[in-house]
Image: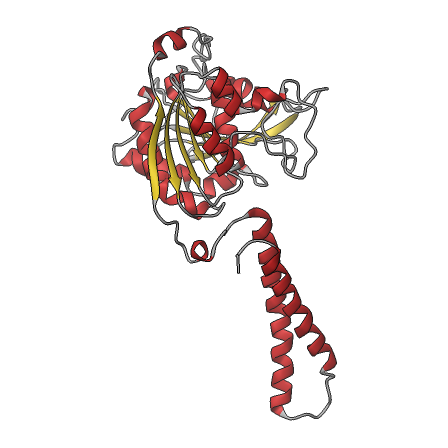
Length: 370
């Protein structure tokens, strides 16, 4: 029997009903033999266990954390690593890009850090693009001094959905980057983890909505980078900016980089996708929604960015559009793709690959060279 689909849900639900009815029919008595009492207690405990199991099965069927029995016991099988596209024509393509952040002049004196002496900082940032004040977390590299003229490359870390910025930190991505930096495989970087959606429970798919709605593409592609330049010692060249995300955040990282290649030089996409997926949520009125179809965008207007992409053939959210994107990739876009044979849509699938992803970033973008 498959781990996903209605079959397992119906089986567990049926067992729950049978045991629940049996427990109801087993009327308690003041005096009854010890074995009978123990049997009834076991039925009550089994009802609770089956209820928890049913909840897990339903959630797994919806979100595809585990897609096979082998996946459940931790097997991702073999995978392939392949390069697509390349740097041919990159020089002329770069010449056609806009100025990005290069014309910005960072202030000589920065605003004070909200939590001096701590590596993890938290700001509340008023965003005109989102129409709200949102949280932005920043993981500072060792030895960061706002009074020093030293500048750093930037990783913009994008969390999944439904989730919050701190889940990116909790998933171990900043730690993985810091470990590779300590080993001399990537430069020390400032990691900026913004709130993506406003309100947090609203699925924006990182697009600009019409009619005064949230402008998430503008927030990530323009307003946030300019805020970072005004508050932290960062570099402004595109070779020093990369977006990194998983699932929904992987989609957002790919979208913001491919749509704003003058700001971001690369992205790392961990089980993301390449077309907006609003799920059961009604898609907002989005002008030019086809412009967010990254497969179509790559086919018609490839841009000079680099990407490290991970997906699994069993991941029905990530794999279909990712495989279509990989088939569409052509120069000057350059992609390094890891395609696993097995694995559901969960962090345990991509977390072991983080060292490879950040080593790739350290080799690929000049701003991240150690």
